[in-house]
Image (cartoon, rainbow, N blue to C red; front, side, top):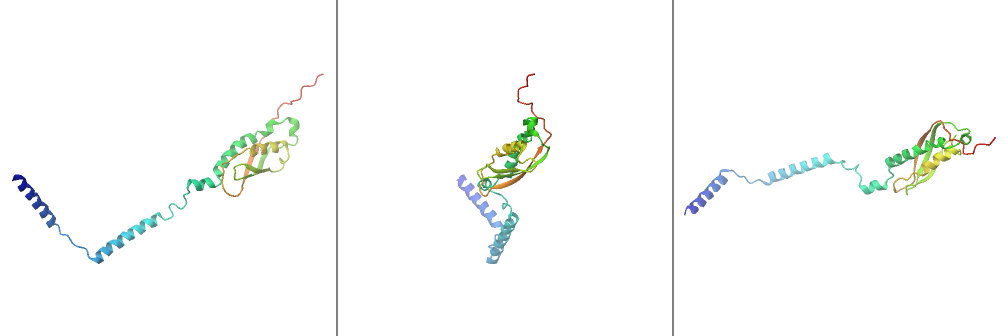
Length: 172
């Protein structure tokens, strides 16, 4: 019996608490007004995010483009070898050599290899110029999709420190 009384008292308290709140049924106009307010809030969020992801590329889109940063990195590595070219020849092979900044035009095929490289005068056609082009032609960049890409590049050629002659010394 005690359990019954406790249950009835609990139910009475719940009903009393529920009845004390004034609940109001919304009219159609009020419900419409609430929905319009939610829609305005949603549109405001969309406007705030508009264009936020337009500049983002997927991994596959990035992989398809020529990677300028990677090419610069690889060209810097090759430039270390190319800039040492004047120091790899004998004095007799360096006739007419002048230090300075060589300007190159390097064209990359979409397989990542160098398809063409040229060097400006006065190094074009010289042993030092050919050495610089060999160093640059060894560059390999990431595969990409699209047309060949030509990059302008500079190599600083310092005064030469020729290697010793490879000829055996003459006997007297």
